[in-house]
Length: 236
Image 1 (cartoon, rainbow, N blue to C red):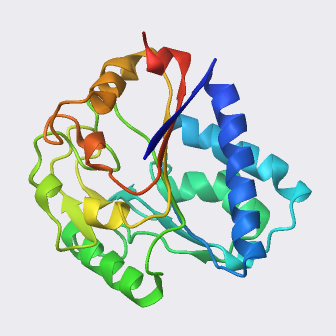
Image 2: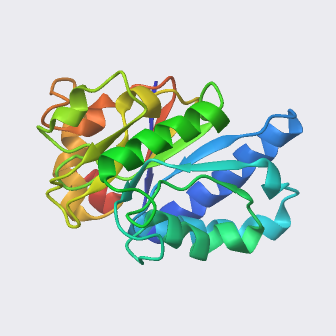
């Protein structure tokens, strides 16, 4: 099932997503569940994370009982500002006191992106749940999600949790990404998409016809997929 939520701008989008995020985590804990959540990076995620931190004090969430993962990561040192993990920690994880944060190994703790992917898969098998409660994803102007890019062989991998990307079209070239097989094991997937440069990809992703090869966002087929987009990204 796909749902679409259109907002006038990125700020309004972030406000809505943060409120729904906090409500979802609160509801999961009220059911005595420990939610597993995969985070994304990027400009909109930055706004969402800040809004979560700002509203967290209004909710009774035990953040030590929320397990955080990452949909993808740049294969750079752990202290690099390019890492999604560092952004998320700075924006809200450290502020709310999250303790179960599973980072994708960086270049200072793995010899290659391939080894990092193997290590992350092993960590998820050890500490992961049967599925995610929530996966949050951005989308690039080319329609890529996580670090799964149009035409790349990683789109076809369905027997691994995470894969290495050595020649990303976006710098830095080395990355680690969860596969569709992992991303789609989620109760809910939320796309966070903002900006007119994403409008063409959004339309391709929503179209009745099209390929995952051309627009990887079409490969997200979980039971509940919600697109939070601003008016610019929604286009016409």
